[in-house]
Length: 70
Image 1 (cartoon, helix red, strand yellow):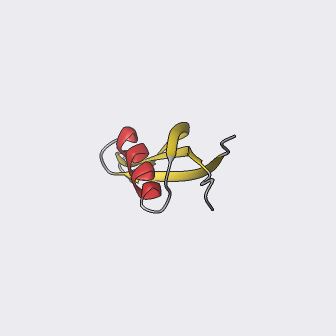
Image 2 (spheres, helix red, strand yellow):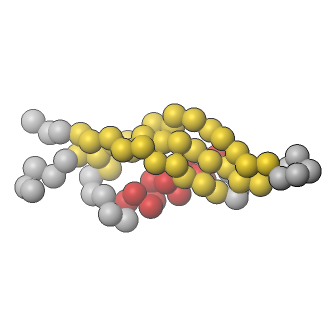
């Protein structure tokens, strides 16, 4: 029976919240195999002194299969 592990990450982007999610998953994929899905937990942003949104953040859970051949 497969086992799934879930880790929480925060992605950041200057473009959009969607890109922040992509950044988190892409970074996780550099060292984690068998990623099965992502769940967005929270959207946050960074605002400068003039009230402009300057960075987008996404808190995500990334789920991946535990390697059975460990």
